[in-house]
Amino acid sequence: MGTEPTVNLYFACWGHFHRETAEMLWVFLNPLGSSTRQMTEAARHDIIDFVMNAWNMWKVLHQGKALSSVCSRHC
Image (tube, rainbow, N blue to C red; front, side):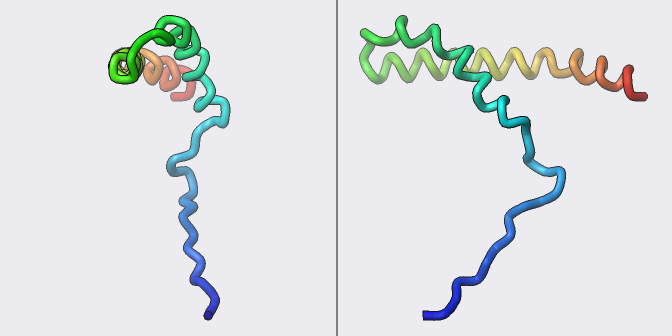
């Protein structure tokens, strides 16, 4: 048994996000809990997929406005 090679998967300024970003989804998804409690598992997954797709579409559609406001302040 030799020593296992170490792999550094850290890349500076790549793939980092604010730690609270991951928890923002729970605030958005919590109201679904009572609505989907009585559903079958397949229906619950369909609803959650639909809501997540809507969330991602909203982010994409508003990305330009957010980036333009950041650029106008820093450029």
